[in-house]
Each structure stands twice: as C-alpha cells, then as structure tokens.
Image 1 (cartoon, rainbow, N blue to C red):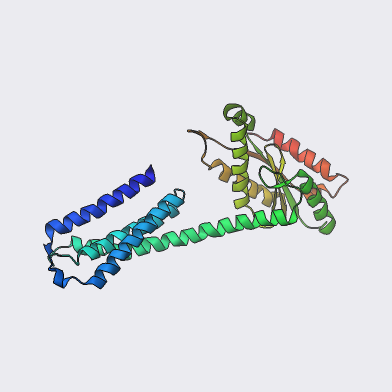
Image 2 (cartoon, rainbow, N blue to C red):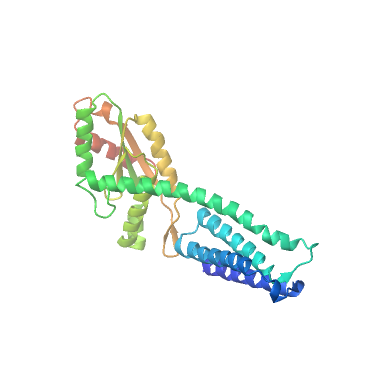
Length: 293
C-alpha cells in the first residue's frame, strides 16, 4: 500500500508538471522542437520512472530504499521538466522552472547516498552469506531449522580448541530467548520457528567471521569466540542482546517483543582443571537459567 501510494504520488507530480507548463508556458512552434533533446530528456525521465518502480516493488522499506527511490524520483521529475521545456517557453523571470530542472543534480546526490548505504548493506549480507557457506562447507552436524551448527559440533569444536590452543583465550556464550514457550503457546510452533530463524540471522550479522554460532538446544544458542576472554565476550553478548531487543518481529498484526538472557565463560580457565566439556556446558546452562529475564 505504501509503495502504491508513492507511485501514485509520482504520477500526480508528473501530471501536475505537464499541466503547469501547458498553462503557464507559451507553446513553441513544432519547427523549433529539438528531437534529440526530447528523446534524451524524456528517455531519462522514463528510465528513472522504471527504476523508481523497480526499487519500490523489489526492496523492503528502510533508509536505503527511501534514498534510492527519492533520488530516482527527483531525477525523473527534473528530466521531465527539461523535456517539457522543449515544448513550452517559460518566462526567464520564472524561478520555479529552474528549481524543477535543478532536481536532477539534487536527485543524483540523494541517489549517491542511497548507493553508499546500499553498498554497506551488501557488505553485511555478503559476510552473512560467507558465514553460511563456511558453515555448510566445514560443518557436517547442523540444525535443519536454523542451518546453524548443532550441539554435537559445538562440543567437538570446544575439544579441538582445547587441544590446539590450550593457552589461548576462547570464550563461550550461551543465549536464551525469554518466554519462548509463550510464543509457541500464543502464536503456534510455526511462528516459534520463524522467531528462531530471525534471531539466528540477527546474531550471525553481529558476530565476527571467526565466531561459531550454534543452536545448542531448543531456544538456546551458543557462540564460541576464539581469542576473547570472559569480559570481552560479556560485552559482545550484551551487544547481541541489545540488537535482538531492537528487532521488530510480527506474528500477524501483533508485534512480538524478543529479549535474551546470557551467560559466558572463558573455556581456557574452565577446562584448565578437571572439568570436562560436558561439565562446562552444563554449568553455563545453569547460569543462563538463573540469569534475570
């Protein structure tokens, strides 16, 4: 509906420009029309209109979409005014004509800003896809719902880190979705699955390439962070919790508020004693269960 209104408003703006030039301007004799200018300026307006419609109908809403569409709309209107100027003569003292034509460079500036933020968006998506690719290439044990590594692979990776880098920090973070059972109860298991997928995507986008994100069990995620101690991992975990809390997840027309609890430990210190990997995971799971919601 929002995109339909934007396209409708653009069509009204184009028609208004046409009526304005036809009403205020003085028609030029056909012999003075310059076909090349008409084709180039009118063609630019038409192509900008097509790109404008493609952007609005193929992208989700947000800052990037608004900048791209706004820049293209300005270029389209400015080029349309340039084209109409070939058919009607406007008084040199008129300012509005020059303002309309100035929309072209202004639109290019807005479009450039949109392309800049679009590039940043693509970089983040590429990193996300690279993590997915690495997961499928290197991890045989994975969760089919979220496509993340599972608890079996996590335990194997913990043992590998302990054997290969026993003196290096390696943090382990457990994250638990608050009140997940209520989401399943109130909205159904299918909606609960959508929540797990959405949260896993958000977590992946906010982790380093070297971090390993797993679905540990149910609504619980585990993150293995090589090179980080417990304090550094705790700061990352708080950031992850804040990012998930900012998500706008909807179950139908109702917004579902998502929050996480977390607990973290440095596996170098935890595994330095006689504790096994299973014991460390069990102790961390108890700490998550006791963490305040």
